[in-house]
Image (tube, rainbow, N blue to C red; front, side, top):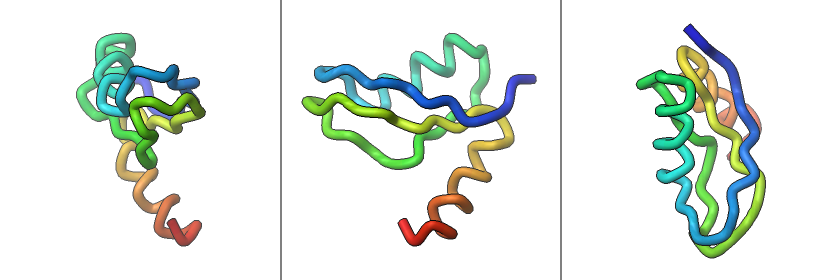
Length: 66
């Protein structure tokens, strides 16, 4: 099983959900979630949690005040 946080440079024209779907296929993992959203027209770094860390990501956002 693969677990951890992956930083993805999301290109414009792709939604955060599209990134999650691609990561699911790439890592062959159902448990994948992102730590926030980027506008589909925006480019930027999108942190994505894979495996058990998908729940850890929620805790990280709460601790940081996000």
